[in-house]
Image (cartoon, rainbow, N blue to C red; front, side, top):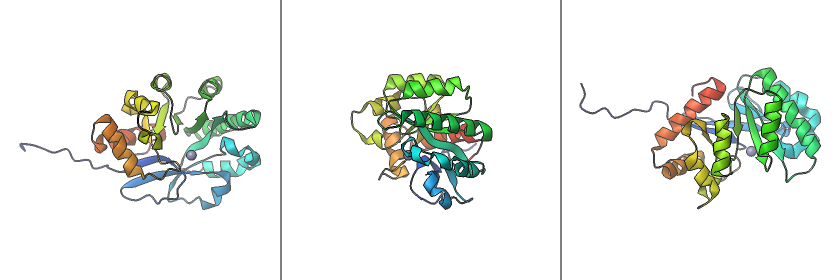
Length: 228
Ligand SMILES: [Zn+2]
């Protein structure tokens, strides 16, 4: 028997669940790049994507068919970002568009990446009314610990990013209060790298970066069926 076996983490790839940057996946980092309808021509089969019409872009509603054609590809691992934003106009159209994305996610058996601004109750009500039972990831989660507990109690995932660097924010308390089995990390449009965000997350929890990376990999497997 060896006296001391240091754990070896074979799967140390850092998964970035939501980014708008065109960063190539490599041996260390796997990105799920979000494609807006205006970016569908940059789709390629060698990367992972999510695709959808953002609630800020309701004017692109007519392009849902083109979005659907991309969503049907197997390396498109989620539908979105989609959702509701109370600070933006055209609430009725946002709602209609959100319903359509839920239908697409059901049709292609894919999780949802949610953009939510001040609309947590409305989004939960719609998801429940449509009996959507596939995984749901609230990206850029920046709510309170109470909201985090409420969402994760329903099995929803929360993705944290740049707001982990806002000292004394409620997001930091929410992150500390959230079970690792519901956590993702993301860059979105931030200037921080995904490595910096993982390191920050590890420091805040006082655990190794490997532990966060392993949990996120497990969570990614839960939502996509893939091991990376
Ligand atoms: Zn985004």
